[in-house]
Length: 272
Ligand SMILES: Nc1ncnc2c1ncn2[C@@H]1O[C@H](COP(=O)(O)OP(=O)(O)OP(=O)(O)O)[C@@H](O)[C@H]1O
Ligand SMILES: [Mg+2]
Image 1: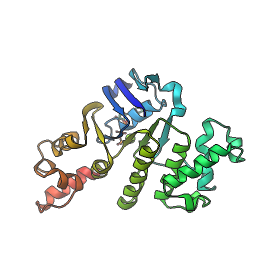
Image 2: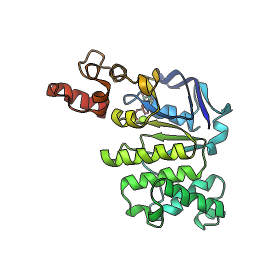
Image 3: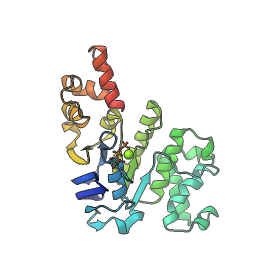
């Protein structure tokens, strides 16, 4: 149970305003961050895990400064940042690194609790039977699930992921997102995940944060994510497409028999 509060968050890089007074709050939810390339998604996530210092405003986790509580934040990367040559189990175990040293970790001197936690986390992501397999011999989707397990072993209160499925094929992307959501729910962790694929976002998110040019465009729940909002987010308000379709078809990208160019535009926009 935890609350992430983003307050007037502003980040400037020279004269580029990457984030412009963004405010929202998520509590015990699986929230998805949406927006075009350059909208500020990665900047927001980097501020949330303390890697980037905001220019103004701030982010609080359960009322405390995030910068001082890095171990409370578990991060899952697009490039999974695992140690290739060793097992899924040892990789998951390094999630306890903030509590023990690298040497202790590699020598497996962790406590019995850490070891059990690593196995339990691998079970959560459906990889208990593959615990001893080397990460280099696993598929991209499995590797990403090891990354999720490692973040869980850290016992965070907040899970962040920056485009965790961007490099995966659609089927693996859905599988990984399913495990990520399951992990967050089973471990009672608030999650903020940036995604490019609107259809996947709509399938897994409880809450949707839309950024456009560094500004908060929307902060809506499941029932409020309309095709109109998606069109606005991707800057095509005048384009015939998503807005004319019913929500399900728009979000699921089913071809509704509309003319091909419209379907293609929509596809491009949603997959971009
Ligand atoms: N370290 C940096 N130095 C200068 N400008 C930066 C830096 N990081 C990000 N920016 C700028 O800030 C803006 C937001 O970038 P950000 O990476 O947060 O977008 P994004 O939504 O993650 O995009 P993408 O979907 O392509 O990953 C962009 O204009 C980008 O060029
Ligand atoms: Mg990014």
